[in-house]
Image 1 (spheres, rainbow, N blue to C red):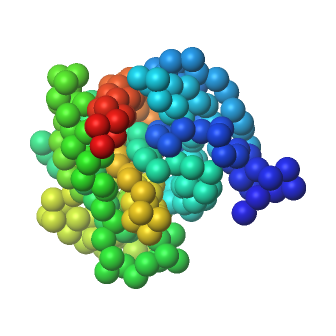
Image 2 (spheres, rainbow, N blue to C red; image 1 turned 90 degrees about the vertical axis):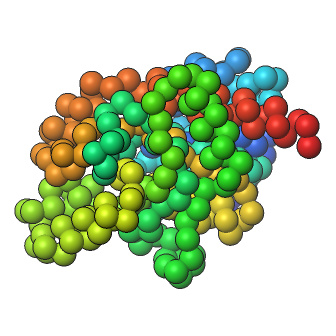
Image 3 (tube, helix red, strand yellow; image 1 turned 180 degrees about the horizontal axis):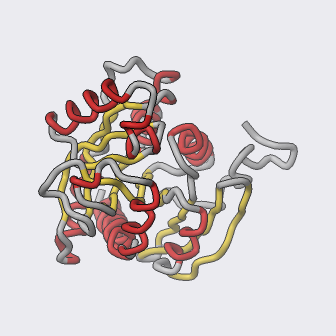
Amino acid sequence: MRNEEGLAFHLHIKEGDIGRYVLLPGDPGRCEKIAKYFDNPHFVAQNREYVTWTGTLLGEKVSVVSTGIGCPSAAIAVEELIEVGADTLVRVGSSGSMQPHVHGGDVVVVTGSIRDEGTTRAYLPLEYPALADVDVVLALREGAKRLGLRHHCGVSQSKDSFYGEVERTRMPMPERLEERWKAFIAGGALCSEMESAALFILSSIYRKRAGGAMLVINEADLGEAPASEHGKHMAEFDADAVIRVAVEGFKILIEQDRKK
């Protein structure tokens, strides 16, 4: 869908404005910070929660575009980015720990997501898995290794309700929410976030590559805590670590793609 100026309806960008490789933070305020890791970064566009910057890595055009919070706005961003030429998309953001061995400050390279949200049901039945691209996963893992950062590879929970997770016991159905949360933990989910499922499902449908690198901002025993506590823990961790993992992963993918 385009506007009267021929731009993507929500992102306000067109072909040539972005590279095929795109990083996807949720926070619009983080785009400029991420773009500083690029060579020759420049601002492209801003509309609503969507901010776009473009630069280069190893001489290849790359971009960063914010998605806002949650799968609905992330799906819009991914749809429009693919329409104007993106084919490799990596979510870079924050998450909550779901396992005792996953600590605050660690990075989780997401291999797949629990579709605990509503957006992707408009695309595929829930039986269809939301999986990251294996080459992207391996590149992000290698990036974390090269940087010497503590990291994990595994499944995330993609949810719709932030407060429904972090303050489960004050919700109208606390027992059901608690039962599901414990089931996901028992199944081995490493972290909880709000966008990856949409990214992975759309990338699968459109035959594009996608992955995710998540900074963990709390300990597993703080899985349920007042939102103010989560804000406190987020402030204690700098997003530079996960940004560097994503950028290093892109460099690895660029080098690999040039050999194909």
